[in-house]
Image (cartoon, rainbow, N blue to C red):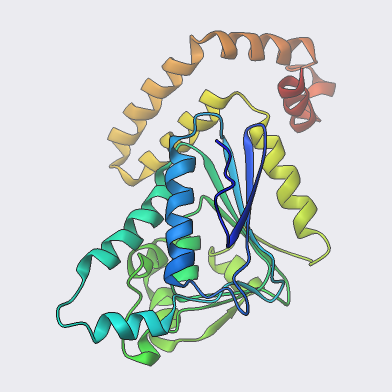
Length: 277
């Protein structure tokens, strides 16, 4: 796909890796226009079999996605009848980024709040910047509640009590706290996040695609009762084990020094070499 029909998002593709940079000045509010482009991008990514890893970034170093457009919410509230499909459409977009057979990574270098934070929660991984990244759910203080999957995803990420503190308190959560609570994978120095996320995204994108896709599916099966999840894991493992790419990759792993003392001391490097070979 070309990914060239966006005005608020700059999309680039390098093989199986797609990177999107949001630019909606002055503070990356999720306007209806940006919402439409994000939803359309999610649908295009979901339908593109060539993509394995997707990274979402911001052109503004101070704001990732500020929050959903409050003026648009007021217009919805003033409508004669509640347009419930708008909320469902936002949920559908969030679910698409969570469930698509791609690895989704949010590189959050500035503030993220409201619907932007909720969208980020649906990504497979989130990385932030020490001293820059701030998360805020500002809905309760303005008389509403997080309606873009936040009340459901946040307790799963940080636990019920901390979700209550964030949602009911409307507090700012700094990057180091967000990392400690599980909202961020890592909080990194500003001069390291770009290289770290890029290296991780490219590393994952270099691995056998079916292994990446089914591993994500298997991790998501942890939401099932453990016996069901383990049964599903076993089935996915068998599916991969008897595939030609797996046979070739395992043989190359052994040829490069896997299962030797020296090789196992640098197993992450060998794994990268397997993918590169």
